[in-house]
Amino acid sequence: MKLSWGYIILSGYLVFVAGIVFLVYKASSQKFDLVTQDYYEQELKYQNIIDQSANTAALSAPLHVERSGSRLQVGFPAEMKDKKKTIDFYLYYPADAKRDFRKVIETQGNELIQPLPDAMKGLYQLKLSWEVEGVKYYFEKKLFF
Image (cartoon, rainbow, N blue to C red; front, side, top):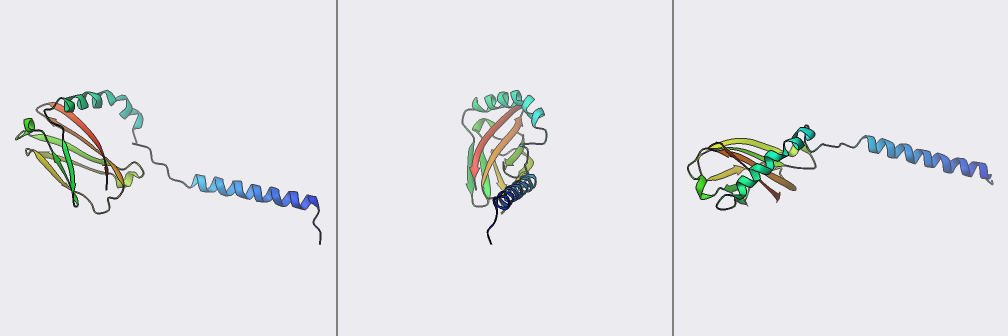
């Protein structure tokens, strides 16, 4: 049996339409996380981050960040020894907001040792912000677990 050109064109058109419908379905079922829920408000407050980063750069020594096993160790400069620190410890995972890890810690020690959940795999961004004697500081570093 020989097909006419009309049937060949119709079947090609139907395959094309089915492909487009499939692509629309797949695209609409994808999950997209924003960087943060209040992205625009955070962007407007970014000057505070710049000022806090300048305070961190003015310290006598840089922060020391080291991973040992299932914990992260952060060492502060000598001038912060025995001073009360309120630390916002935030591990940000850009691909999935559910894998972020955040904890607020108060300490007087010069070293912070934070146990990490076992499920942490991939590229994270450590965002540390802390306050000592009314002065705020900020530090960022990319870490791969």
